[in-house]
Length: 81
Image (cartoon, rainbow, N blue to C red):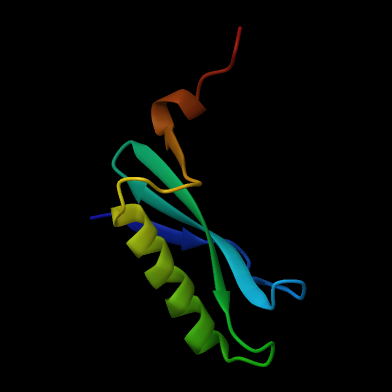
């Protein structure tokens, strides 16, 4: 099981899509996946947010995701010397 966090959702007028960074916390790993879904600007958040989360989960299950960030929480606490 993992925790999920979604960044503030923004509307990109050039692509006419809502965009957000979805973060999965899985054990010691943090996986960040950028998502974008096309909806009208007046779309209800109750439609947009589940669509973004669904897209992130689908991308997470693919073996070759074009843009993904995977960090270990152990590494986040260390500073470069």
